[in-house]
Image 1 (cartoon, helix red, strand yellow):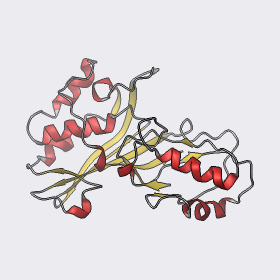
Image 2 (image 1 turned 90 degrees about the horizontal axis):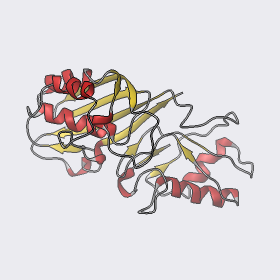
Image 3 (image 1 turned 30 degrees about the horizontal axis):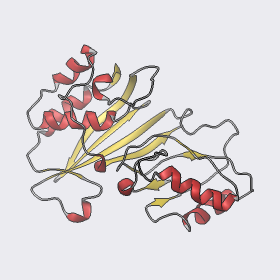
Length: 239
């Protein structure tokens, strides 16, 4: 499915706002005539969008998958859309079975941000050094302890080690796109990495600083800012 996260507190059910999961479960409960728990492939943050989100759930009322998108979309708000549905194996888990994810972050680098892009593009009016950001992004690739680039999730983690398969930065006119693929991501890790790359682009940090922080195994500090959530999309989940 895809969704515009602007008006949601994230994907996962929370007590401090409306979540995407809540809207999905409300619709499925109506269609199923019984409560349905929806398990998502990722815990996207408040304001973060998704283009290729995956979820799984069990129904007690038989509804053919080919009918499910239309049935759900007719009752979902316009900023959430089910794109496709299919039967899955009984033991399929949308989160645990994922082999990797791709996130994309969109940054508009010019004097003025067009209003129509405001919900989906972050904005920076100062000039950015693209080559420096590209060099810094490559230093994230590989297996590292990413604790310096993650926020406290307020829950126990088995490990903060993750593997980044690729991280590239592309520019087309004023539009800069950060594309990162990995086996998994910590809480606010992508936004933190992008925030640091922007600092590199501004000349406030050197590309080599990425390696220094990763190899230092130090807790996160104010040196690593968190980029705004509105430019971030969960682009694809790999199985």
